[in-house]
Amino acid sequence: MGVYLDFNSTAPIDERVLEEMIKIYRNTPGNADSRTHTFGDDARRAVETARAEVASLLGVNKDEVFFTSGATESNNIAIQGLREYAEKTGKKHIITTSVEHKSVLGTCKALEQQGFEVSYVNPKADGRVSVEEVTGLVREDTVLVSIMHVNNETGIIQPIKEIGEFLADKETFFHIDATQSFGKLVDELKAIKYDMLSMSAHKIAGPQGVGTLVLRKKRYKLPPVKGIMYGGQQERGIRPGTIPVALVVGLGTACALVASEYKQNQEKCLTIKNALLEELNASGVKCEINGDQNYCVPSTLNICFNGVSSEALMLSTKQYCGISNGSACNSKSYEPSYVLTAMGIPTEKIENTVRISWGAESDCEDVVTSFKELLAVAKSFAAF
Image (cartoon, rainbow, N blue to C red; front, side):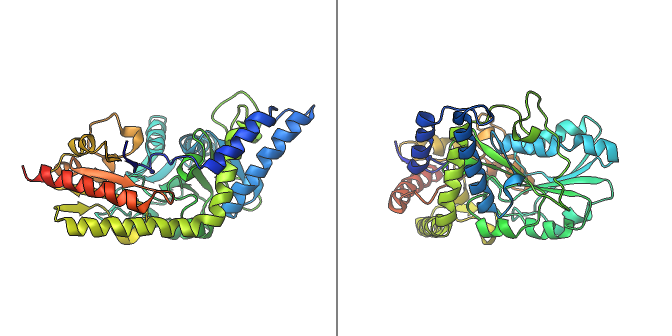
């Protein structure tokens, strides 16, 4: 079966998280919005405990945390939810980057069809966007700047702290897609000034199907985000629908675990990365690492094996490891990665690129062993 090395797509659920979820499924049958019996009270307490755990990890207030089905929905609400405000104020300009997740890019493209103007900033060859280029695009009619913290394909960290500082006293909202950094760059996120933040539980060993949209208060008011669906007043109208109590508890539990373990988790991930880089350097395989590793998370490598088709490499090493060549949302597409294209990487190199990502629970020895097998296959392919 091999070693799982596609954590940026989804991380295996932590057994401790699963245990807490099973307790809820077995013992807490109530709807968290039912107010006429103790079953509803029990469910509501469990949800609010989880909300406090998410808030604590981010250093925000409980009433700034809204549960969603995940970062894709959170991104949609953050961007689409400002439409009414934008139309009332005439502020219909959005700034984002060309390497965002499709849930951001797709939403921005849809708004362009409705009269919005969107500026897309390309990253430099190192994978990072220029702070000056982003801030230089801000205008009086700019309603939103939306930038991911860590890129899901390359692991490159964007300079959102500097952008947040610039926007802090502006009448422009700042949204962060923190899907790949939440629970990992914990101290960094606490220090960043932003108005909205999106995340998914399954990236931090929580369950799939639940996430958070954080709406930070400014001058005691939440951002003027409106719900984009109808059907109920759950989550104060931001996200209607029955709250999945067990999933929310799973998210809260994952946050509580991360809060006490994130430092050693990062150290474990860095140990694995250093071991992989050592093997890579010693292998003699001709390759290039995409993105500046001085600004990269310790759990991701995006590697171009010169002359080796990524599709062939992935298929030929399935018995050793599970890797990918891009975002899971594009896994059925055979088009070159739009992220690497935006970085200016030639198509022929993109077609030779794979993404390897791991977590703190990954066994370093197993990962290195499987990576050696991958390198041997890559070396044999490159010889032809």
